[in-house]
Amino acid sequence: FVTDPTKGLFCTRKLKAHNPGPKIPELSGGGVTLNGVRCLALRDDGETLVSAGGDGAVMWWTTAQLTAAARSKSVPCEPHTTRVLNADDSNRPPAIRALDCHLYSSDVMVGTHRCDIWEIDDQDGPHVMLYGHSADVRALAVHPRHSHVVATGAESGRVYLWNCNG
Image 1 (tube, rainbow, N blue to C red):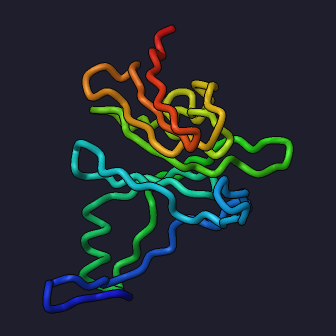
Image 2 (cartoon, one colour):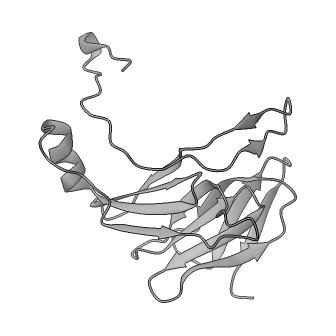
C-alpha cells in the first residue's frame, strides 16, 4: 500500500471486487491491457457505491458495510447486487470503461470497449441503449434532472450528446 500517515492517508483494507477482463488492444502503442476495476460512482443517496470493471460486471456496495470493513478486517464485505452485461460471440462480456448513475434510482448507464452504451435497470436488466461511437467509450454523464439526456466521450476525441427518448 502507498501510505502517508503524516497526512492521515493510509489504506486499511483491500477488497476483492472485479476479475480481469479480456485483453484489449490499446490505441496508443498497440499493447494490451487487462482490466480490473475501471470506474466507481457514489450514488446520490450516499448509501451505495457502484463499481464496474473489465469483467463486464456492475456491483452495488453498501457504504455502511464498506465503512465497517475499513475499520475491522473481521467484517465481511461483498456487493449486495451484481449484474453482468451479456456476452458476445466470444462468450466474453464487454469491458466497462465508463459509469454514471441515474438520480433517485438504482439504474446505471455504462460505456464499453465495444463502443456502445448500456443501461442496467431493475425492470429489464442490462440492455444496449445506444450505438454510435467509433472508439472505446471512456466517459459518460447522465443529466441530473433529465435522465433521458446523456453525454458520452470516447478515445476518438468526440463528445456525443444523446436524447434517449427518441
